[in-house]
Length: 343
Ligand code: DAH
Image (cartoon, rainbow, N blue to C red; front, side, top):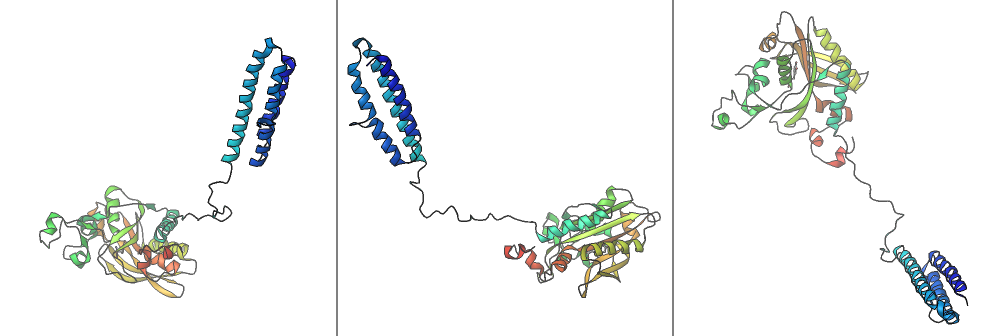
């Protein structure tokens, strides 16, 4: 056999063997191909090796080099195919694993119903031009009481009705709490903070937490939220207050809601009213309101002869509970997901 023929036989055989290994789709067909090409007893490589003897002596060296290269290429093609089939095999997979079963659903959190209510209230009031304002939850007596016309001997300042902080002064056994900071008991504090920093006209709401040492029951909780509204301008009247409350109530609770003002008293408003909503069959008390007392305007440096205004403070939880039919405020703060996930 001439060298030329020998080399082209090897070329053809190498291509054929590599293709056979590459296209083997499982271990059995690969084994058949292995025996055909690499088999010790009758493989094609063995056959071609035998033909070395018929090659011219002077060409044997070249033929031998190519033969070695050929063997190693075919062996590599076989090894690669074997590797491919074993890495794709199902060996080592848990037999109880069923990829067709649905997976575990990830738990996705959602917004707390009270926060949802706050967002909704801000949106309604925002449409009437009220901007959101904020104030600190740890307050001083000036903003929580004094500037709001709540004098020192007023029962609202009783240490039993407020969370005074254990500052040096109050922890020394001194029951005179003047000067001691406290957790704000009402969002009316924000009225003062806004007016101290801004000239009229003012149109703000403030939504936030307030704190009172009440024993928790179905309608009381030591922390709850209020929405405070404040509008100051020239010629503001009680009719403006009523309109704003009405627009708010119909937007939040629906067109069939009725509102009622009952005469009341708050140190920071004159006259003062209690606001009730009639909704789904009963009257519910929602909070207080009134025309800003001139003493409050004086405390913040507004001229009561020039300006008038109204304020209101509503309980956020009450609105939220009424709307969702929640009967116990403690459910809102229990952290029980079975309850919270309903909203
Ligand atoms: N701050 C009052 C409270 O916590 C509620 C309130 C009443 C707020 C009348 C007001 C208001 O702005 O005008 O009970």
